[in-house]
Length: 162
Image 1 (cartoon, rainbow, N blue to C red):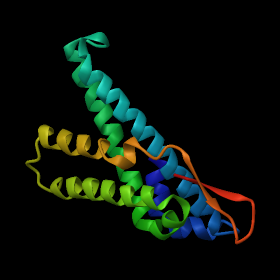
Image 2: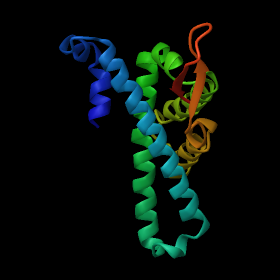
Image 3: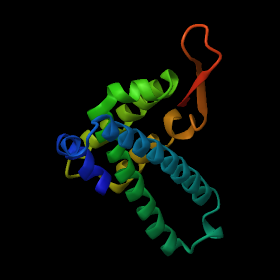
């Protein structure tokens, strides 16, 4: 939850650092780590749904699935908060395709978050929204580096997260 606290206190955090760009780098690292963690959550969910009896009894499985969905929800909140706070930095930090996929994933997450305002939201609707978020291209893809050509005439490439 410290990531959520940090994103909410962004202006205070910037004043504590000598270089405000440091906080942006920290946010980019955080969103990349959330991206990797969400991908792993997606893989675990797929595995649990394909062979549920392999890992847990049915009573235990529902408990562990609830925990997994709770983690996905928290990671999604972190990604959403960072995106809202520094989307211009993200645009410069990840590939254009990854950024577009992130925007679509955020729209999926945001849509589900708005429906959460209804007090009558069922567990089924919640799971469906989180599954939709986990099945987005941004969560499932873009785990490599993209190389772009440096300044004109240079032989060097700049590595950015895809």
